[in-house]
Amino acid sequence: MKSCQSSHKEINAKAQYILALDNGTQSIRALLFDLKGQLVAKSKVDIVAYFSKHPGWAEQEPDYYWQMLTKACQQLWPELALLNIDKSQIKAASLTCQRATMVNVDKEGKPLRPAFVWLDQREQLKLDKMSWYWRFLFTLAGEKQTIDYFRSQSEANWIKHQQPDIWAKTYKFMLLSGFHSFKLTGNYVDSISSQVGYLPFDFKHHCWAKPLDWRWQALPITKTMLPTLIPCGDVLGKISAQAAIDTGIPQGTPLISAGSDKACEVLGSGCLTPLTGSLSYGTTATYNTTNTRYIEAIRHLPAYPAAIPNTYNTELIVQRGYWMVSWFKREFGLKEQQIADEQGIIVESLFDELLKEVPVALWDLSYNPTGTLESEHLAQKLKAL
Image (cartoon, rainbow, N blue to C red; front, side, top):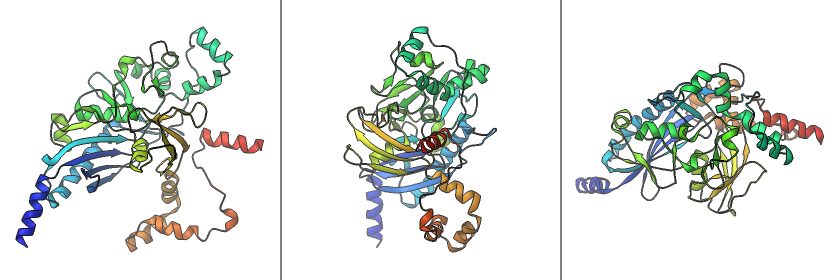
């Protein structure tokens, strides 16, 4: 028996592992994989998705995300000790984050305001005029309303007009993935495949827009305010001394460019071609395919960068997916939650039983508690029918 245990420890000592960090909307996870892709150990920290000072607002402190990410890492290390795995066996780390959550930082890399969480619904309707030729061209092409909508949804435009002092101090404006990459490596970098949001990003060519592109006039962002983009699979940087102290990840560990949470889900589900679809039941529910050509499933809805270099994820979206289950559980599921806690089961399993009691005539009814523009547009279409 002692010989077997000794042999097992020797095998573990020779094994190599990859650390994956996942900052979702409702939790942050640290996961350790072996080189065959098998999950070896994990930790999970539930987080507060956002706070809201006004109706429709959704914000969260960037430093809160960082603190919870470090907590998830620190909770993982005791699990490795139980498996006789030393942290020195971690040969690389990667990072994936919720999409379209924006962070402003000053020259010292400190956040200037709460992050705009992707669930935020505010608009900036009063906008600076673009050059006459762009206005003429968009009007001629019948796209003025589309461009105005894009600009009104931009977090950058809202901050510039509503918090001009903060915008003036903004040194870098980046996604949450870029903020975490900076905290981990000290570099202002981000993955190409994390770029989803109202940014001057060229979705077809996977780079920041060219200097004369209309996006630079539509948004108040300059290229110097943006991080350097790194392709999937390349190195973003190495874990810094301070990040090693905060997270426990060994200093010098390479941080590999991965992609957004949805892009990684699509890759992980084995959806590698247009012939395979990936269904994701996250906070947002999505259906994705992977293509080598740029294809918009819906006009003006871009194909996002996939977690495979030079490929695209063509996506259809239900804006509030599993988030509505969490909302229902929080607002109406107290009794079921108490029963689940007593029985040591997940509360969603009790919801499954309740669903069986719903009359067939009600199966097509659903409720969206968010009052978003998407639901308003859907209501208008239904009225037209």
